[in-house]
Image (tube, rainbow, N blue to C red; front, side, top):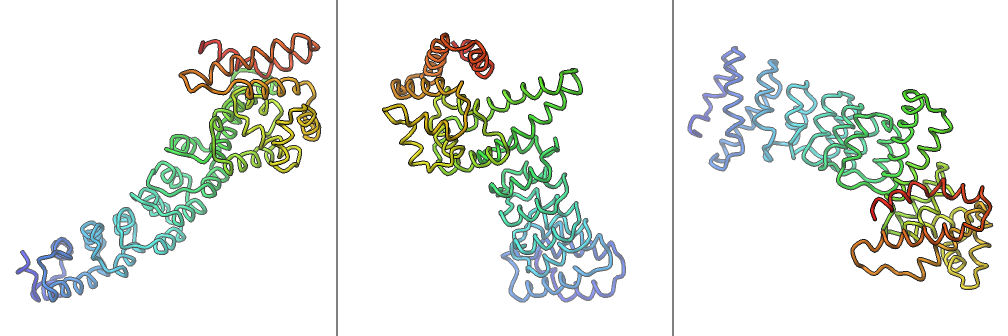
Length: 373
């Protein structure tokens, strides 16, 4: 095969005006370029021909080169970049898979604003973090949806936050984002909030529910989902970021704190009440677990939490202290049932409006626990 790659090919390239002839020659040269069987002089000749043909006036010639050279690691970077800057038919094959193009090259192409090129970059087998961030900054909804659907894309917490900032209300972005293999806890919480708002609008517009009723339903649904997100989370810094985000967006509610205790997540409660009371975490933990029982009340009051829920929090903390998980199957569910039963027993002596308040916040959890039992 290589013996046909000669100076005669160059002569043919220059003398034959037929686009078909040049396209055929482009395919031949591209297929052989970079092959181990080529001598140094043959490779140099092939490269010279490619450099001429990459500027051919006929798109099909350039497209044929791109299709046959897109996966070739020996392709000179400047040639690859010339192709990537070309019209879509030539550029997309290179942008989709070429490893010759650098992150800086890909970012430059993204800034050109061509949506089809952005889409090709979003679907690459691997999308570096810097490229992903640039795409999220300027890409279309379709390109960003393709990016978040790509498990090979390096999407950090800040970049995912920008995705929600720009396209949080988009179903085409929400769906692949929800189904990504792993989401930072702060992103998952924000996504829950976005989806919940959409559901609230649906309830109001399609089921003739008063807005206040729909909002209450969504609040409970959102809190259940939020508790599920941080349940068992051991990353202190992730919990700290989540609590700060919840506080900043007005979603760090008293009932959410009670829910966290009822699911055994004392770490979230500690971070949350520390944030709400503006007390350092170390001090907050000492007050929460103060054997004299005055520490929790002082911290609770400083956080401006409703007095009606203080007994529930105290009982929950006592149960968590008295009943460590045994590691057996279902230990968390047994723990929650016992905790809720203790709370409801204690609340028998409280005013009916306080009991109603607690039941309204925990009723859905009780139902779940009894179904599990």
